Image 1 (tube, helix red, strand yellow):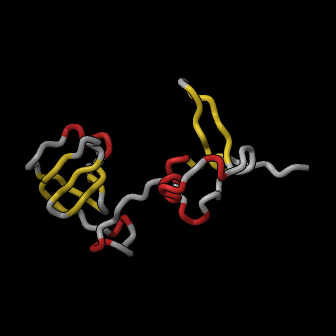
Image 2 (image 1 turned 90 degrees about the horizontal axis):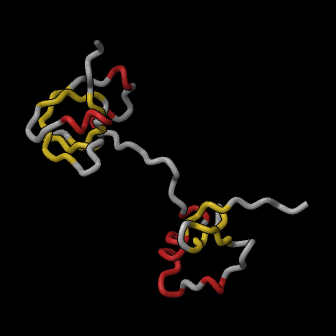
Image 3 (image 1 turned 30 degrees about the horizontal axis):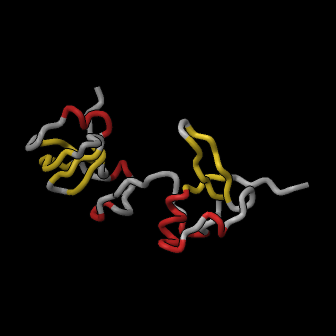
Length: 127
């Protein structure tokens, strides 16, 4: 019985690793990569584990403020801070205390507004 391969690694990651020496002819189709049809043409996708430990995690990690590292979320204090920058992806906001996660509420925040944060996230009172 043949071993089943999962192809999930983007060709952009392989191009970034190989640089100028990247050539698709160096790899075996069906074993190292497959070509998948997309709307206009084809796309090359490499085998999972092809890059080894270089592959990034699929889930992005939220930055946690160093001041509260090691504390359980329920023990982190609620702190007031001022909004300094709102990103195009309004879910992240820079404050005078650092970058925080605002979620969908980030669309209603304004520069200079005083907000409350807890454990690196926007803190809203329960209603």
